[in-house]
Length: 404
Ligand code: ADP
Ligand code: MG
Image 1 (spheres, rainbow, N blue to C red):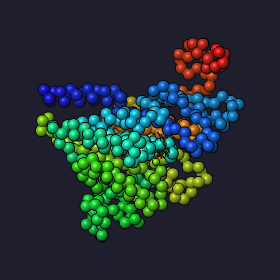
Image 2 (spheres, helix red, strand yellow):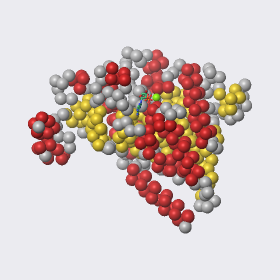
Image 3 (cartoon, protein in one colour):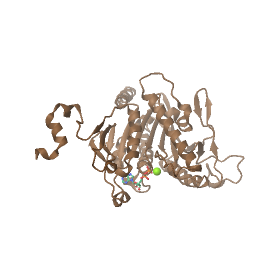
Image 4 (cartoon, helix red, strand yellow):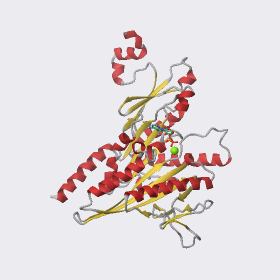
């Protein structure tokens, strides 16, 4: 019967999802930009197979005198660059998980210009180029519609930004104490340009909560898109007020779902958080002074804290203490990282050799999350145990012309 069918469907879905692991890492290498091409950059990233990339490090620096370092890095998937549709095809199952009651986080990590915003948001208004956020909204509503006979859902969304250690509600609710809220929208108060309202995070018995975050009702797909877009527009205003750039702050879009089913006598509540993280690049020492230096230190702290949490979650030490407390970023993501939550991390990289050091940093960050041991090799050395056993393979690597 229906209840049994639903139980089995969920069981299979969960088994498949569990096999993929609760923390998934996808590498996405964008195409070479016009700027990189005109500057004479060469590609330094090569896709080896569906899950592996190879990076030739420092071949500009070494000028061919010494064999360059070649490193291989494996993840759950590699896209080079893949279409927006390809990328989302692998996220769809996570949308199903959200509707099955799981918390989900998707975030994009990488240097500024690596393609994070393209992956998460894409090009608004251009259906082929839309990123994960608009596609997730569409998929959620499509799936809810398919279930509407047996389930009723309520969606609420919030848009936050974390700049340095300031968490900002980009769409705060009108407050009784706030004078002259602009009547742009009955549920949203657009604050004055120069008034950015930092949100407090409170810890209640080990759980971090943001009590004043405004959750906006999203009865329709259109309204959900609109909430996200209003948040995006406010982000620009807030950043200007803080004299900051979008690449230096984390954007967090959250959708809360509660569902109830008479048929299945069930209720669920879950949340999906989609984040476009601040650029992971190290600021050049000479540039990092004053505010920019503080910014760089804080971004580094937040990304290290995120790495630390993921590290602990993927380590084999069982019930180890997970350091959510270390930064506002991990505090806000607490209930969407670890436990039964599912996490998908994109590593967004440039293919250009002018960026190889940042690309390598990004890939290493993701490797840490995946706990896959990668070998750094020099060209001419065997790439795999198989190659080592086969003198022919080894020879072919050393001198490609030898066989011709
Ligand atoms: P980030 O948000 O990491 O700073 P962006 O997403 O803004 O980087 O990407 C930098 C540039 O590269 C943009 O002009 C973007 O359109 C382009 N780009 C990024 N990823 C892709 C891709 N997969 N295909 C085509 N262009 C891309
Ligand atoms: Mg960006």
